[in-house]
Length: 252
Image 1 (cartoon, rainbow, N blue to C red):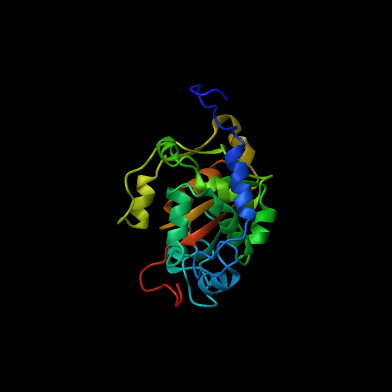
Image 2: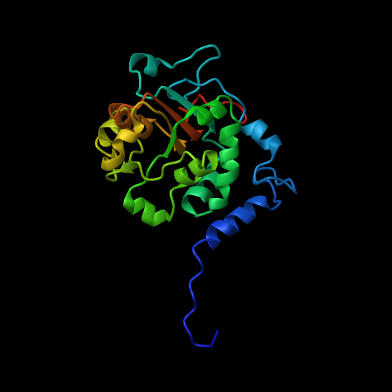
């Protein structure tokens, strides 16, 4: 290349190629610093993401032997099932923040592996006809550069993932500090199906994928859109669930 000439842009496939190569390199565990290791070693996964009894329809912790939390018994959500791989507590907020806000897309592969290895996740992925990532608004997508839920979905089930079937039609005000009911009101009309393909969900088993579930309002709202369009069964699979204060388990 001659000096002074404009630099050619990198081919579009290179970022994903670099990310794929990095996924295969040995590394240090981000939690215990063991070396060489996966991004999070098996010992840390066993310690900080142990199987936990959770409500079958919102994934909040419940006592052993209890299927559904009181809120879901009183007000059944449109989700038929909800699965969470871990509690959103130390050490997970750091790596999730790197993945979500700092553009470290290499976390998608180990996080998807963690999600798929949890009890009942494998059957949920296998039984799904469609895997839909929770969508971002256009402004949020432009800000982050990628949809972290889509990166997870593609690694969970690349052949079933539909990136543009479920749409985010508008952004919403900040949800922090709001209860489930207030969040649900904020999210009315925030999701829709691509009009020309809405019939694709009719009679199908749909798996919604997201990184973090806080109150469940976003997943519930999206699930209601899918059910209204005729989806036969909707399951949410998330990486981490924010538990109410006082309900976090030892080690989290």
